[in-house]
Image (tube, rainbow, N blue to C red; front, side, top):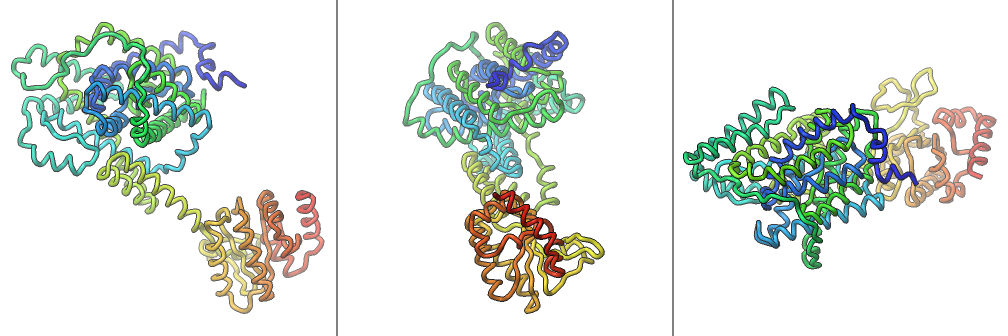
Length: 575
């Protein structure tokens, strides 16, 4: 067993040097400067006191630095997971209450255990059933929902909080006249400042700039803005160790939202990790190891009062751009957060909530991926409508039902595509030994007595009837002159018992009509399955050919010697 695969920090720590530390130090400081105000803001989204956002930046980051396979992914509180937490926990307890906090921490433990077990059991492949259009539609809808929910803080209006956008819009329409002018001015100016500095250089800590501006305005001109809501007291000190309160009934209630967080968190981490992996050649992201790292981060985090965490798109990108090359950058960020918790929390007393809302709104609205929707509209109509369906179901039905809709639609599309794959008739290219698609090559030669049929997928129970029906339809068009059917099986990579039974039945059917049935280009494992399935009881081994051209030539000229050599080869390899 390779211990470095289990504990990836051992891959880079023994060879760590000063040149790496310089980049990691700058990146760690930069990410921490962004993380601290974001952590406070995201805790508010989750319905928790601001300090819990900073607790999320401690143990989870340490565990990921040790066990994560990516060296540049930044772990901590994120907007999407925070809203999912608020959506799930708010149905079980009063927002901000002690029981609400306890349930949110218990949720982190549940999510961590599920992630860890999935990693140990190597179940990371499960999320592959969520296609990219579904992920894009879901992420865009959640980003929009998060942003709209922050309008209550941005404009100082007591809007409802909901993950169903229609209720938000109705409430906006009813209460827009109650806008707090001072709050709105500070919030909109903060949005403008963030966008301005982002346009100049994304490395500029725009979140820190507006936080400092907001604090100074309220500290020295607060008497003129006494109607602007501020953070007020944030407790100092580090979180103590405690085991989450276990309640079986609550765990049962939390499982659907926990599974949603597992899916979303893992998808975020893998997509971020893979994008960062492509920019270097020192390490490779291992999906199951990522699940283990995320799981341990959430499990240990729950012991230190953290709610569910995952990777951040924005902070991970900034981490990489700032020069991070190892997990040391994350450890430096942790040290910065610890210093903040011990000594600097009083500085945030005058921080306006509208500034935090501005930071969140700009961050999440950037995740609404309009470009991908436009691209899919032009490139793949089915994927476009899959994105649209997921997007609007998440917006209108809520996050939990949105992810369920996305998974369901992904599976339906997968089943549809595998049950109705591409097929075609092949014709011979003049003056060559090649056979090509008649729909794409207009000059290929087709013969009434020969049908070359290609099927571009595995042949199994879901598409066996589709294969049969389309083969029969093309054969019928050939008319009474048809004497030979050749199945080009080069694209068939698997066949099950249903597929084999269908082939045997069709062979017998065409034999009764005095039509020969040949196979060309059958892969070894597929051929083995066909032989074990009893196909040689219906046709002999001489009906299998390496290429379509060989099958046609054998029919026309009786190239017995060549086919005898190939038949002997098949027989030997099968034995």
